[in-house]
Image: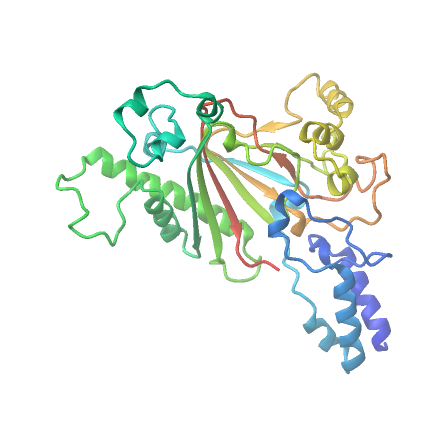
Length: 374
């Protein structure tokens, strides 16, 4: 087999490789089957297939064997067997002591600009809020902590320390309380660390290579909010990652649409063409195009009115959502006005969004991702 034939065979292999990253698939027009969603473009680190093909062609011209060419191509990370037929997996992992996490939230709604005002007087706090304050009252980002880890136990402790929920292990006597914590406080902290460790370990086990080290480098993020600021991504979207864990520690969890290629009763209601290509700034309009109301209504009817077509994650429910990095290759782009018929046998990235939050509604959200996966 000559080098040109070897390259073509390798391209075909990549195209049909289940769970391979979409950025590696060779299309007829040398373009990606999907493009990055602007809501998560920061995390999109893949090269376009045109660039990849150019590099592969250069390698083919200078290499003496197909083995040399294979070494130059990016390594494909196989997806976990959990996602063999579905794109979303739920696991109940109840939070043992939510009252400990609640310490990162205020006891009552605050006026953000007053609390941050230097030299605020007594009269500043007695005077009624103005129009600007009323608009922003109860919509507060309180905490946003990121921790990288390869050891889940260390990562869990660092998350809690940086969230100021437990004392840092390196704090000296000068910052320590003169009073010993109560036994129930010690137990709550210990069990919270153990719970968080198990959540991080669960993600790490699924995200790690099937035949490789399991202590892969991950990043965990805890965001504490009050009000609508906690609705980070109200638009239906899919993430440009292999897999992501989302768990609400306090408050409502994410909304997601699971798909299962092995279950004929599982309706396909996502317009994938709109998901990947829609240019619409109005979130409400975009959502109705990506998930058409008529398809959603038909799906509910087929399920005897069951309201489970769109899942609403609960507190303490760890949701693993497969991203674009692990989705199957789509053989052909979906038709302009179609989003559900084509590629029905392909496991594609899970579509999800943030829940709608009321003013003064509290929420603490945990997300976990791989650091290096391309």
